[in-house]
Image (tube, rainbow, N blue to C red; front, top):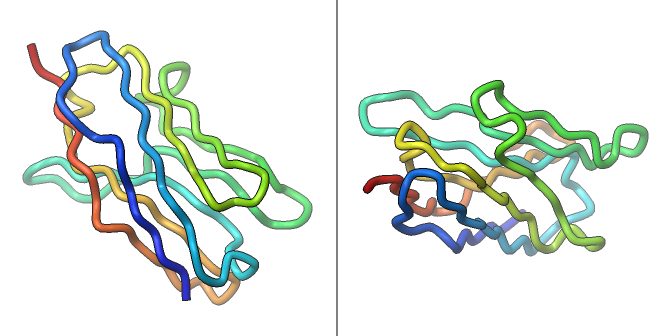
Length: 120
């Protein structure tokens, strides 16, 4: 079992920055990948960024095109904190952001979500 708790959401003006954090606990050794997803009202949940924890691809990252060069995903050395640094935020980034972890059995774990609102 893996437990995830997000923090750091809020209201920011267009062009501003926010940093999200995800505290990870439980069976961290079983995790093969972690990521951030988001869901805007009336839309499906989408992958924003992902980082691999698998042995030969550890640290490899993926970003959806719309956030490349603006968002950065990272973890601490112990994989107990995962972060998402979001710069140059746009109104279309407004959504509930969810922390995700996937284990070696392809079981997905989710945090409770944190609201990010980009508005002037």
